[in-house]
Image (cartoon, rainbow, N blue to C red):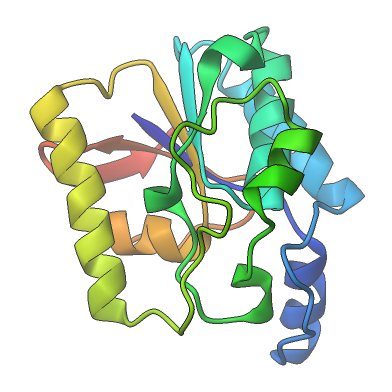
Length: 185
């Protein structure tokens, strides 16, 4: 499986400069974030990706859409929304958009059983994040369905799953059986 962090968001720009939460709820991608997503898609062209799982945040859905397009994959057949790969709920940017708003913007994505309000009520602990990462990893190990899979996620989730802190638009190849991650390209 390949993990990619979403492209740069408006929250990332402000937080990187000030280290203060700017209060941006479910931010979208910047132009740089869109460029990073296109670049990631181009770099992943030879990886055999046929399926994409994305976190339900606006920034990851937009990144998944751009990557699917770059790979020539029909999003209605390849992009599945999975709240297990969401960001660790800690800042304003981790307040999501309601399912109805997301499905209106991305009607061709598979939202499955995603509830109308799917993000946590309170800050998520590191222990809770670790348990969520274990659950995701174990489900893919037992199902054996990680080949040809791209997961579009976040800094916190990728760090919790692999131990690696990655920048926006960066991809890692991850073996859920071994728990090992290496650069994807």
